[in-house]
Image (cartoon, rainbow, N blue to C red):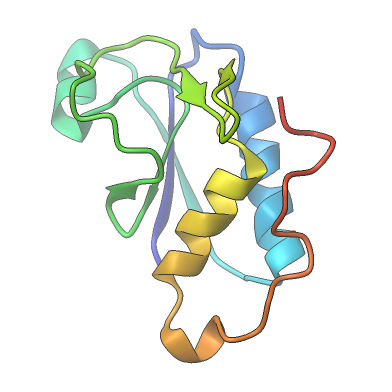
Length: 121
């Protein structure tokens, strides 16, 4: 599994999203290297299809595809399962994407902490 964490330094939510991603991986017992990629220019944003900071790609797929959103240097808005907007992806959103990328023989058991936790914003 290839995980890429794209961020723009001008957006203050990326450190919390970085921690949340690693917390979810730990809770699921998944060891995966995460490539941290700083997007610094509009041309890079276009190249990556960067929907805003932070963006998490798993095997090249955005965990929350937003095809109508233009690629640009900006902060990102996620909509949680209950419809609330947030600058961070929910823990459940990250867990679903990570588990969907796992080979079938590794996703048979239910993860311990795949549900929404108290740290969801």
